[in-house]
Length: 418
Image 1 (tube, rainbow, N blue to C red):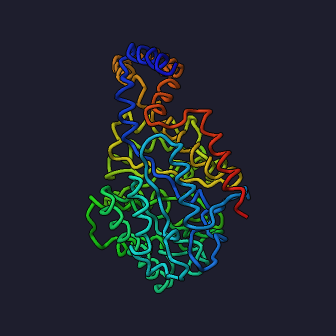
Image 2: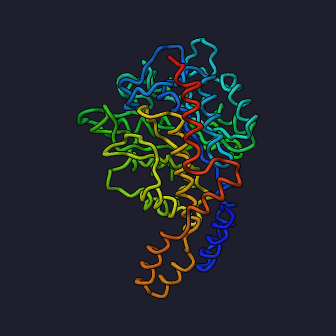
Image 3: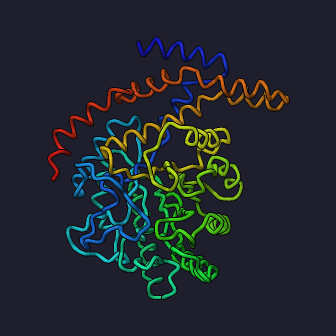
């Protein structure tokens, strides 16, 4: 049945000059970086008992079965990865190190705390990505880290970022593909500041110090991530979009665009072709904000589709690193990974199946009526048959057949975690 429907889909697409085989090959070769923090509500494995309170980060919900240890988190990731077609990556925050129950200062973490993650990833053919954790810590409690007015606090976080970059480079060298280490800080304040210039000047200087060590881009890439506002930093965020856009252009860093980090009416898709004129590459944090940066599970929806359409149309996929960033604690956490990753892949595939050549020809000839008609009518092409073929070729359950596996895992494993 699959074979027949895919065959007829091939013909429908070929009639518009679209090559589904090429689209499937590109999809299979494009990894998505799964964020480890969906599995445990951004808890991590430090033995400090620190919480996320005041970090501008909130995982809401208390669905049973949260991973409580490194082994449980890896087991949950294994289940998710089995139900997601293709070969992917895992994105770790610094607080997810294998610390063996010992308390390790964040400025003193090293590759040895991630060697078991490297072994785990290598055994599964996964790449790893990385992030300094500049929140949920006593030295971040007042809302400032790299832009802090106290030079000693700034230095602590600079050393944390330096340590994280070195860890990322070790990961990338060990696994044969560059680790993207992404810097996001919560710095900002709840009410209107009298001095916006000072914190931003300090942040630029601190980032330059943190990035001073040159690392091989074959092993490691730096990214910086802006944010519009956060819980506790509603009125002022030091690392705004303009700040990091200027920083990424002048320092030639990857720019991270998180879909929840802009005004609700702003199109992240529209930014892609502008920023890529000037920065070496993009990191995407594919997410879904609902009225604010609430990190809901990614949907197969218009904003996400538009984002991938822009990346594919512009030929930007080779310069784009795709990662996920959401954490929903109100539903099965493993299912949240599977749903969000599969939806991200669907948005990429539907973009790869667009009749772009015809659309561009209509546009170039001034036929805007034809362009609009084709754009809309291509939405009813048999996309689902091509997606099913992708699942079949990767020996992954198709839609409507993966959820029973999650439900069984919930009965047999997750429900026993108390």
